[in-house]
Length: 119
Image (tube, rainbow, N blue to C red):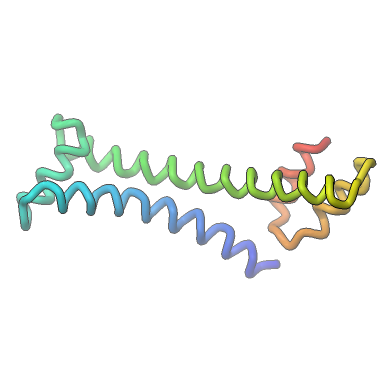
């Protein structure tokens, strides 16, 4: 169970770091500049041509939003999986649905979130 918790969180952390890094790298490559000028131009461009500091803040905000989005996508994936299993197994009571959620090999926090969705 601990290994799955780590995998679940690691994927969210990779999204929160990878998306801003990809945004920064793509913007820097298309600037046509090299060296320190490319870094300065990219950060200022990401900061809506106001300040470099605003560009850094925008990358941080993008990272936080990416983390939140990845967490939401995990929840939506398991909600759709539960809905599919409910229709396949033709579960009609709430107790059976809760037992189905308990049978999944997912972290306890995600199980609790899914249970509150069905309560």
